[in-house]
Amino acid sequence: MNNCSNVLIHSVAANRYPERLRRYKRILEYNGIPYQPVDISEQFFWEHVKGARAYLHHYVHRETEKQVAEAVLPVVENVYGVPVFPDYPTRWHYDDKIRQFYLLKGKGYPFIDSWIFWDKESSMKWIRNAELPVVFKLKAGAGSTNVVLVHTRQQAIRLIDRMFGSAGVESEYIPDSGSLSRLRNRAGLYKLRQWIACHRGNIHYQDIRPYWQRQRDYVIFQRFLPGNKFDTRVSVIGNRAFAFRRWNRSGDFRASGSGQVDYDRKGIDLRCISLAFEISDSFGFQSMAYDFLFDSDGSPYIGEISYTYVDELVYGCPGFYDRKLSWHEGHYWPQFCILQDLLGEPELRQPGNAIMVGT
Image (cartoon, rainbow, N blue to C red; front, side):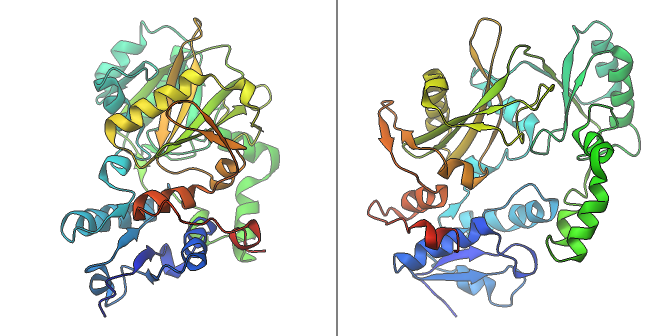
């Protein structure tokens, strides 16, 4: 059962292969590199791991996926000595804004000022004199679903009470009128549409309730940076930095998940590129996306980081910057760049879109 030359690709739940994983398979097939789909629940999983060339376990925010990855990746990487993606420096702070703040602030990098409290008394004492508005965030979540703007102390106190209460807060359902999930529900029966899509087979049942862990016993407040009409997303993979801007939703301060993407290079502040490279090199990240906002002096600050991101948006970039800020034309799938680096295959060929998008 030992497949020593294989690249292993782990499936998600119940042998599901989202498009982001299928693209790894298509690139490997196109280049004639042997690979093996694997599942931790299979009897011979660890036999496949022995002597494997590399192990890909690309997971996202869903609690089920995170639970499996956190159990398997350290063993594959540290006990079996198999190169993995994402490796420990890249993944340990994933989907955890508290860890990200501690990590970057500890090295003096410009992360947006944040106030993190682990007990109710300290947070209540702080909010009495805090300058408002401030941003309230849960440590997990994507697409701005777990972010609200706090305008009043009463609003902040309600959130603190819930976070330190017995029930906590369900991810994506912050009990606040500014919650994106509440706005969606008002606009169009969001939960009902999800349920219908599941029963029609358009989405998996896990996608309806992807977060089964409630958030509690901490609070995060972050300095509000007014005047930002967009954020700048920089995704660094090795010697490549892909960059674009995301415009805020109409009448809102949140840009992540808006879908309003601007690839015009003229709008990219090159300080963001340089800083993203510096941080990735400092910590040895294999892949990292950085979300930048600007303060009133025009200085860039990081709001959060993530090893994974929407691959189609990175591919949409008309090229990338290298560490010398030289520009390289072309469209590249992040999976292709990751495999080049992980396998040490600079001559790896990227398939055309007829293959990559499955048309």
